[in-house]
Figure 1 (cartoon, chains in turn green, yellow):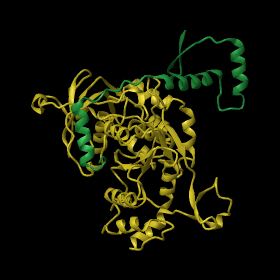
Figure 2 (tube, chains in turn blue, purple; figure 1 turned 90 degrees about the horizontal axis):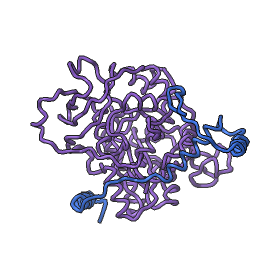
Figure 3 (cartoon, chains in turn orange, cyan; figure 1 turned 30 degrees about the horizontal axis):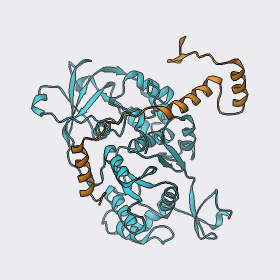
Figure 4 (cartoon, one colour; figure 1 turned 120 degrees about the horizontal axis):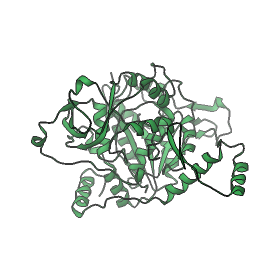
Length: 77
Length: 377
């Protein structure tokens, strides 16, 4: 289920009730004001650690160009 | 080394014959916007491929994130008035030009939209006070915004380009040097002993440091760009290992958005490949608009930022310890502490005097004094 909350789309995810209760206890007195904000925080942390990088590899020609420039500027010997 | 922000280092530089483009409508943009165009094109602002769309702007304002949830705190916007671009509509392609650079980039107009200056200023700068330079800039913006991807057509050789490395180049350099963990230090001033202490303390725990001065529009009384660069050259030559420290500039304007800008600064350094970013007291602040450590606290909102902030509190020289200290490591009373006052150092230099070596390295001071007029007038 997706709902619009303050202009941002949110969705509902089910987690076991005992886990939810544990989390509620854990976030008491912390900066997290809801179970959702805590779960969002943790998931963002987890996801960012496993996201793939899609960096283009340098071609041989580009690599030589970059190397030459860095050498000319004194960054590389 | 850090992954690029959003997972992909953007590269939007294409060489095209300008004769192919002559018929396209042109929009002249100022120097700050030109720098934004170049920073988008070479990946400093990755994952942005152009100026923000309406939904991204709304999300940046409300959530400090792009619409796809990627952390992003400072909107990169292209403003214009209707009379600047007559008879142009969504779907059209235009050219961005600049007085200094001439033809700069091609822009696909995907969206034209309106915005509310007051709510934009309040969200980004936490104030509506037009004495705040960032708020004043927002109020001087034009009435409409364009969202769309840009392609850089030309980037002329400019002053200080010998110190201007793109994220692709810094990443290559770090790899060649065998650095896996790199800390970035941002600066707008020549280095005093306190700066050196912060840089070397951070460097102790990583493989290398990127000293990354911001070059661009400055206020009257600020040190000139060439003075900052020369003074760092002197410091690095005499007091840093060549295999552990490099300097490269970042061309962008200061927004003075305090905590939000600290996140933005960290993202740009992540794109250069840095894994750590030094955040000092009142980072990117101005006047009393932000608390001294607001720029530290905001990082707790971003578990997915992908660059580690290294927080420093204010530091001073303790005459009892006979070293540079901060409030976490020195037990002595304030009366023993001498603050590194930028104002005092400036006054001495203005009078042609060399500050004490407790404050600034002699080689740095002498380099500054070689300039007839070291300050922006």
